[in-house]
Amino acid sequence: MELTERNFEDYSSIRVTFSTGKLNCLKCKRELLVIHFSSKTDVNHDDLCLMNAMKLAASNIWFPEAIILDFRNLWYKWGDTMEFLFQSPYMACDTPLQKIFASQGGERILIKAVCSDKNREGLTSLIRDEMEEDLTQVLFESLDEAVNALEAELNK
Image (cartoon, rainbow, N blue to C red; front, side, top):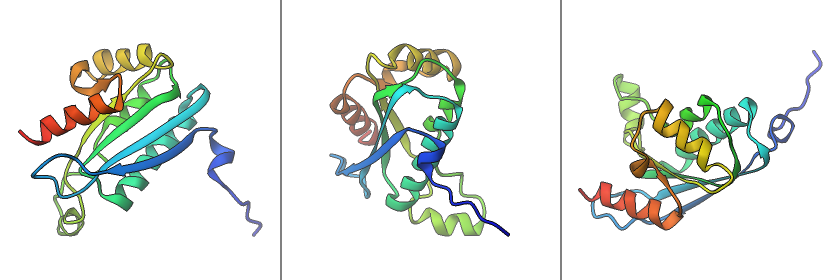
C-alpha cells in the first residue's frame, strides 16, 4: 500500500497558538486556556473543523478550568459550524471510564470569546441568533474583559 503523508497545513491555512494562565479564583484548580486563532481570509468549513480539533487536543493536554477563544485575528462572516467551538470539549461523565478521565478535567467548562472588527458581525449573529445566548455573557472586546467575566462566574 502506498501512503500519503498528511499535515494540517495542507488542510487549512488557520494559524492556532495556545496560552495558559492562572485565574483569580479560589475554587479553581487548573489554569485558563486561551486559544488564539488567526486567518488571512474568511474561515470555511475545513478551517472550522481544524479549529475544533485543536480545541479538543489542547483541552486534553492542559485540562483547563475555562477556555477563551481569541478570535481577534480571525476573519469570520457566517456559518453555524462555528457553534461547535463554544461547546465544552468534555462530555458528561456517565460511564466508569469517563469518570476516571473526569478526574483529569472531564467536567463541562466555561467558554468565552474575544472578537474584533474582522468577525464581530458574524459572531454576534451566531451567538445571539443561532445559539440564542446572551452576548454579554459570551462575547467580549478584549482578553481582559473575557478573563474578568470568567473569574466573576467561577467565583459565584
